[in-house]
Image 1 (cartoon, helix red, strand yellow):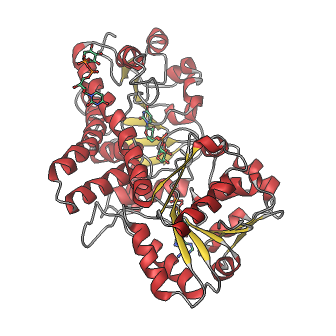
Image 2 (cartoon, rainbow, N blue to C red):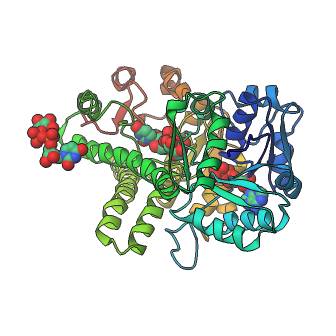
Image 3 (spheres, protein in one colour):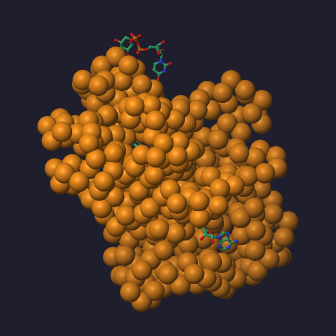
Length: 470
Ligand code: UDX
Ligand code: UDX
Ligand code: ADP
């Protein structure tokens, strides 16, 4: 029969595990939730008395304030967390492999495997183990093999897949009101019981018709599929944006028109300088790798094209900047507004801004960056990684970081909008114009600003997906 869960442990206090389990604690005061992580600094930040949490997410501080110390705890004592729990979420990082078989495509499952082995090594009672990290299809099976081969007599492990669909920047909203919760299990009596145990946790705040229960592998594949389809929409609209720029059609009008078709729908059709984030590219490359492993090269090629189009979009945008600035930006001064991969997050993983800045630096321009949330240290880390072999002192000769958008734009030839922070729309653009070198250019990579209003001020404006006159 399903067990009634009273103690949850979450291994991994990152972007996924932290917010997800904080919300579970908030919504289930009768369940003790302990989030454990090997990273002491991260755990300390989660525990910080003034709530300087390690990740920025609107509404998160409120949730942690209400639950921390009541039934929500953060700790580095992984073993104790495992031993006490009836249900364990594995929510560790699964980056793309950098070397070895499948390098550049396959997920690095090292962290999932060590966490799983730790569970096997220290558990003294039966556990429901829930795979939360996005992982390739059939990872649950490997976890099951490891756990079963190492379990003590009388302890059993049931594996579930429960992928997280939250988007950064709206994580708390998404967790409070998820479109759906997906739980995959083996279709055995024990598997179905475990599934019901976890479903009962979510049922504390999620309507039961939104809790979908499916087979283990369908659940794993659905996560990859959802992200691949979402990214595919962006690559499709971005491909159309290139046609618009070449013809004088307007991508806003096209997106609006096609979005009215109820079969297509209006969301996620915003042309941009390219998608970023920790999931889209990684998950598609996982799907590509999976397809190739299954000897389905046409399927692999189909999905790979979504990533190729995204690379092309970023390259195309940097080239537009160079072309428009009279075919050279050497020695020119460019302000880049936004460094996060999207608005309302401090996360820079796979941010298109990194690629743009790298391209500008390789053209030997001077770049000034402003982002309202990204840590300065993170910007240096990302640029150093994007320019292997270039010493950081040299990068720092070409790049400065500004304390505000207005400061960033002072005495520059061009402003490039790389992230759709709302504050960039509300900048006093007339004041910016007054302080820029002339002619003053704006490149809007996010369809953010009112191009006509800016032209009236005197700016030369280039917008993704619009012909020069549109
Ligand atoms: C995504 C999925 O949305 C989420 O369900 C999954 O759990 C994790 O991956 P996230 O990466 O946090 O979430 O952000 P998302 O809002 O999906 O944006 C991803 C990228 O696409 C961003 O760079 C964003 O700017 C870009 N984007 C999004 C567009 O360029 N145009 C759009 O219309 C939407
Ligand atoms: C299509 C567009 O729907 C319509 O808006 C446009 O004006 C003309 O082209 P039509 O070709 O008549 O209309 O039929 P549609 O229902 O779109 O189906 C097209 C094909 O896709 C059919 O072969 C259908 O069987 C197939 N299809 C459709 C699927 O295989 N799966 C689906 O989920 C939907
Ligand atoms: P995600 O976006 O998937 O949440 P993050 O990198 O933000 O990824 O978070 C993953 C967290 O998991 C990191 O804080 C990392 O320290 C932690 N972690 C990785 N492996 C283990 C492990 N074996 N035990 C405990 N924590 C781990």
